[in-house]
Image (cartoon, rainbow, N blue to C red; front, side, top):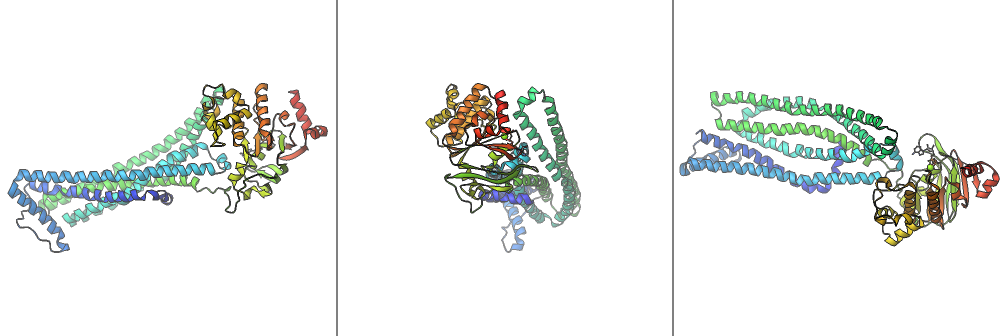
Length: 608
Ligand SMILES: Nc1ncnc2c1ncn2[C@@H]1O[C@H](COP(=O)(O)OP(=O)(O)OP(=O)(O)O)[C@@H](O)[C@H]1O
Ligand SMILES: [Mg+2]
């Protein structure tokens, strides 16, 4: 229950509904007992076993309440029978019975009505909180987690938590109250018989709780497996092109099938155990009732200590206990499942964000002098991919990073906006370590074009507005022009309102790049970080992208990662990287004169 308890704080804003639910449930429990009790005089009248009371009883003291109530009731019926006749008395009693059942169900519905707002509110708020947490967590968190697993937590685990919350409320209020009221009424009818019933309930309870033991584990396994198959599904849709081109459908289908097969096993075990609960408790219930019939029948027929009507009423009440008892045993399963899910939900919500701003972090509102990467060493996992890397970029200058694949170029582009924290050394903007600056203000200074152009399934316009939500249409078009994208956007049927498809796959590679450049241009930040896409473009689109890059670098401080060396010939500093270290550094002509790695790279490319 520990995790569910923590979830309780999400119910707080809706506590008014919980209160209303509780109030209605009190009435529900009360009326369901009264409805059963109201059957007794009816039966007594039908079988002419009604106790005749001709004088109006007077209320004296609390201990005599029971006798007073039953006497009063019998008096009312006796006089009604005498005055209006049997027909009308029956009608009167039927009306009472109907009204009581109506009230019971009315309050039952009302209780559910109110709790609906709490349940769905909880669902909404936890999902929102999860999303908010997911987008604030550092990128590293998700390199380790499967996407499908995260999705399954947001979708199905939250649903499970919501469901079990209702069970808990019912468990705490509705069912126990129904039982308590029924027991009070039963005690009124016969103390002896009631005690007899109570020998059986604990025995049933023990048997039922034994079934629930293994359930938590099974449900955890099932939830985890759900994450696995969602991940496979997600990746397969994402990589459909590769799957098809390599005829790998079967291979992926096999992994998917093996996951659903495992889920099949877990779910079977889980459901069969759950299904066992209901028949077990029903059978145990019937055993109790049968024994009661035997014992109570004895009291009516042989001892004569109980009227037939009271006995039937008593039986109805005892049955009335069975339903909530069953519900309680069922609820304990769903609470266990809910708890397992709550744990998975809270695991994300409570993850400590290592990149959180410190309370003393300052805003940086403008960029004045320089970015300094000072002796930085960094590793994603075990191996250092940057070693004692130092470089300074002055305002208005361009730093170009070149080097073989895997040498750590994109890593620099990841560290500067603090997607990851450095392991050693520091990154300074105007002499302040970015760890001591508000991360959002650091990122506000930077425009980032990633190596894989990331576009969202939305219109071109919306994709650009990510960078500057209040931009006007003219600004958008200007940005597209600078990025050399307007020439194709203007010919699209819906212009900037054209949808780009999932991850932008309705556009060509070069078009995607230019749109993501336009997005950075629209933001108009003082610092640009460009990670040029490695994908080979034809000479025409390469030229278009290159012009776009050059336009965007004008009058800005830029870090450019270039695969086409022609892009960076005019850079103020070119750093040639090799396995996370600086191999050579200088201007284009310096480096050519050096006759080293850079020269070789240039020669190789002109040879291409
Ligand atoms: N998220 C990650 N988790 C673990 N290791 C990573 C991660 N990203 C990159 N690496 C590793 O870090 C090293 C440097 O990667 P980086 O992306 O900086 O190379 P790059 O110079 O940009 O290469 P390319 O020219 O191919 O884009 C590589 O060896 C890579 O395997
Ligand atoms: Mg890279």
